[in-house]
Length: 623
Image 1 (cartoon, rainbow, N blue to C red):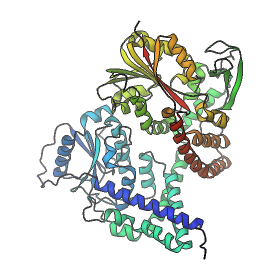
Image 2 (cartoon, one colour):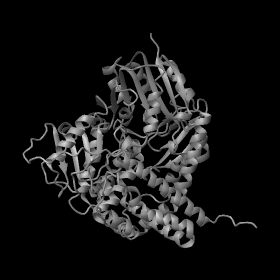
Image 3 (cartoon, rainbow, N blue to C red):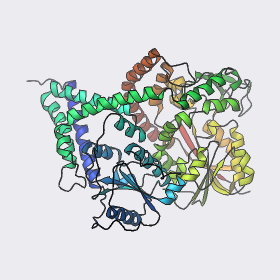
Image 4 (cartoon, helix red, strand yellow):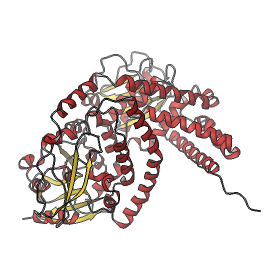
């Protein structure tokens, strides 16, 4: 007798059950790692406030003096400068949501991790508040505002932020808001409320479907979801004792459905209300003024020869519009037939660079860019560790540092090294205020080089040279700034990557119109030798960025349906918004497949030492 193969529904049920089981176990383990403040006997209200600390609380939250003193003692003992206090009666769903986002065992040491908390009370040193320019003189914040503040404060205490359960602290009211309040809290944490609500509703629909169509496995998955709050939070040793645990468990499917619908509706209403605000209107007016004169002025005349070797054997490598932001214009990358150098031809003028960079790393796109840079911790660590066999530097200048994400992450590898940063944008000043760099220089590297001559043991240029107008001048500047025997570390996209040929215009590292030069590794090695450098290490596989297929899907989706609310585009219409929504929905399975392919591609790149980028480490020879 033969048995029928497992149906798609049964496989779906099994996968859901496994995912829910893993999530339940992970949440329980994380709950176990939550520290708990020691219980301090109640004291009189006249207890003096410990010097240097401020306790910021949401409206309606009234910690007693004992809780405040216990929090100060714990933070000082642990060397913390920011401590988020979790009420012991934190609502069940809020507690589960926090445990999904935060691993207490890693939270403090994750220098690039987002600041997370419960949104009720935060203990902060006055020094951090001053550097972060936080005004505490106004009315008390609501939970969403306090969550946003916690996220900001961790940037100023990246390895000195923690969280702990405060047994004497109570939520002081409803602890699990829905609708507009929940949507506001998600946005405050940098999370998209509309997308998360859609995922929640989709997950509930999937659970209901498998439970109805596949009895045993489906019922097990639905039952595990139903009981998850109690399984995680109901143990006798749980540091959190949600007041609503029984109700949250018994009515979980209904409450989740209602919360998802209310959050989705609130997210739509918030988007509609925010479309015509003053900032967006001013931004759109500025772009209309810029575009009134056309985009031809943003490009120089086409040059007839290669800027690297001077050859006139040029051919078009790729010609694309702006797929990153959807701004008007069309851009051409040409390849030199002699040396293989790929460059933007015609290249952008300085005015064009200003136009196409605007609202990408700051302004409208600043938060998204910060999230992307904050997710690259493994890459930053790999870059920093490349120097371990060769030097123990005291001074390091990161050129093109942005907001200093690399420098912040690299301190985990090089805790005694002084990291400075240089960049054209205002972000380098913010990096200095955060303490991610010691000194931030704002301007062009070649202009600063004479002032910094011979001052650094390491200069790094990670995904910087491809953005510059004259990369050879940047190498000259590095040779000036480095002390004899110092090291220059460079990472670049590899124009010889197989994916560049396979994906064509949809290969993300073309990154038009921002990337102006993509040099093969052999060209860079030769240029470094001409400037008195010896290459001591070269990496291809470890430098690979696992985004080839995912990036191709994102660029294709953006090309088919650009953001309808972009201020440099035509006014959004119901049709353009419907098209964008349909394309995004259709792209979801493509993104899932692309992520799987990128995982395989990354494994292959690591094994074969071939990827979409490369790193070089070169020593400046004594002369």
